Length: 363
Image 1: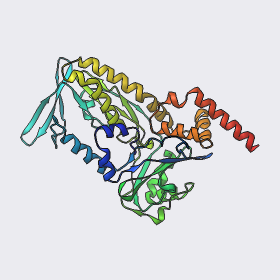
Image 2: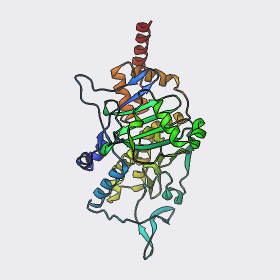
Image 3: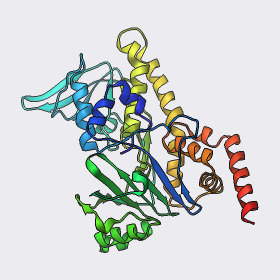
Image 4: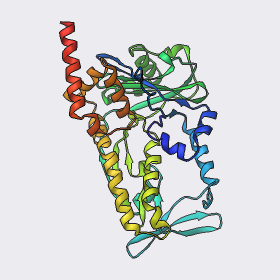
């Protein structure tokens, strides 16, 4: 998983040295399009491109859990599963969880649901989800000794099919295919054969037949995108519980870490008795929507397995031909800028000029 957008969060938590020690790979990527490869590189006299880390969740999650357990004021209760919410006066005031000694009630001024796309906390609180159909399916596997061009991540925009490969810790590469659901019958008939054939047909395909596959080919046929209002009285949602994106874009737990930070920043004064909790939650909801709604809108639209629209054709083709636009696309793909900045009139004008110059040269 790639954690470019959460680099500062991980730094604030003091986890960067641990990530480096665990073998996390600094994320770089190139993207194949019908116009060629988009390969972001730092400007000759400029700073290096912002980077995050590619690391498996099986390595990352214990690091985060350990850091939480070592934080003063945190009581880590392992093995507790929320089975109900405590309510009073129309608001959530705690949770119920089974223990070996019977069900336990845990009261709190604020309950945070960070329990994934099928959030039990959200369902128990009656927070409805809006769903968007995803007309692609995905399968992935982990490989050892799978060389990638330049040793960096690759993504293939095949319109409508997709694929990606990213190096992770311990010399392991995650390789995923994300085809249109029209190809699903063939995959159901022969998963391994279809997976390997799909990869072999990729432009500049990684040599899958020479690598060792160390996991089963796993995947999901149906993965709808959904969004929920991230707050209710006495309740906040972070990560996939609030907003589940298309796994195609490698968000991973990036939005979870980001939204958890926004929530902490907004409610900290109220949590210590120096502010109004409901107003703090309202600010968090606005901030969450402002930062993520645009990305989710574009992801939901692209999940229809459609070809590039005219604006995407303009930007992707120009980024394959112009270094500064390739860097601009890197910032957007890493979610360091939003759609409005990505599609700013100045960027669109530059892309149009690049493509016009290319046509004149080619002609």
